[in-house]
Length: 375
Ligand code: DGJ
Image (cartoon, rainbow, N blue to C red; front, side):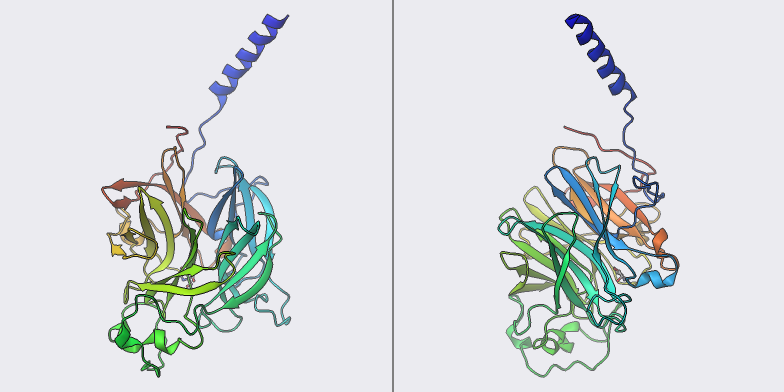
């Protein structure tokens, strides 16, 4: 009897192994969740917690009004990165007219969630534009939760590092009374060198502009907020407090005049990497990449990491996150958005393997691919 039972188990095991299909990723195609609904988590970020992946992103709705927050941020969970279970809206906008900073119609973008081991809290940072301000608010906001799938409670928003100069800012630029000419720059080249506009000085008292962003937690447990600043003309990298809830006033600025958006940071072989985009609104542009020996630099710009016919438009995508897969192939997944601003809910996800040519991260188009477990 025992022998028969063992044989049956073996046969079932073999059948399951033979039948289990590889999980195929098909970039740019609709990606149904457990309810058969296209995943709604744009500008997203990923958290791995206790063996479960959580994907957080912007919940978009149909039509151009979907470019402002009508619902909030949504969360999905998965153990294989392929099949996703909808965990619902984890940060909701407040009703119109409530006066809340996260009122319906504000702009809430690029949520990133990290777990703080000291407090046991899940901490979400995101880009916030108060309602009616277009992108002039340039604020960053924080929310917390006791569980990875929410609910997150909104705490506050801020323009970071008020009253502090960047740690790597030249003394000769530390002037009061910025000479900014009052214009707002959001892309392309500044009329003069960005430093001559002294945007850091202009924003010294009130805090630095903070738009597209990510959060990176280093191996020593320190967390950094990486954000497009100074009218998008630079990227600033700021150390967060030990509880991840505020800025410490220690921050650095890089890539002056390069107009980078959509930063995604990862670590490989002891070096730190950034993948980013240029600034052309919802339209894709040529990607950027950079490498550094530490989060706080010095950063060296590398090449456009995208290859192939559509490399100049980043394979029609814009970066949002890079997910490490230690011990598996690929070792890193590029996560990007293919935006559809005329109908934002239909935005597609471009997930592709990252490989390295020397120190240069490289991303090439694949119609389909899968993760190879355990090397
Ligand atoms: C590009 C940014 O990366 C997006 O998150 C969004 O802010 C659009 N610009 C708005 O045009």
